[in-house]
Length: 136
Image (cartoon, rainbow, N blue to C red; front, top):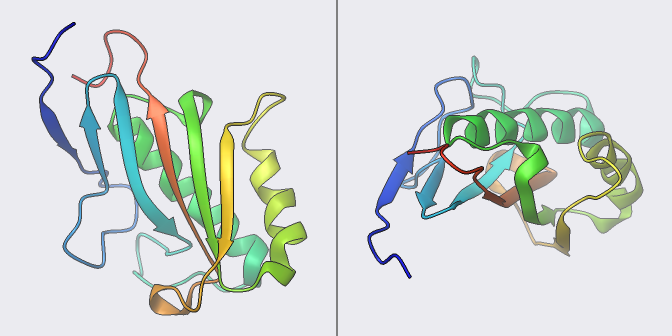
């Protein structure tokens, strides 16, 4: 077993900047652990307008950019956790989420939380397995 794995900080310039003292993601061994992403526009730093569908699309775009910076993609995601301000919006979030994952979506947990940063409706974190030779 190789114990020489190193922890690597992953920063995606094309995704919304972290709004606190955390990294976009951490790579360790063959995995990328992506912090929660919300529907924040990378250019304005503000939540995208348009409700849960628009926020979910921007969230997934931000997450995709972060994973790519770590040498992975949405296709390699093995687990997500979805945090929602209102589970009553679950069907609408779920319809957009499903557009990003094919016939074999990752394992997922979804929970309702009291509040999310910047008043977001949804935040998604992910763990991806990096293909051999990618991600450093």
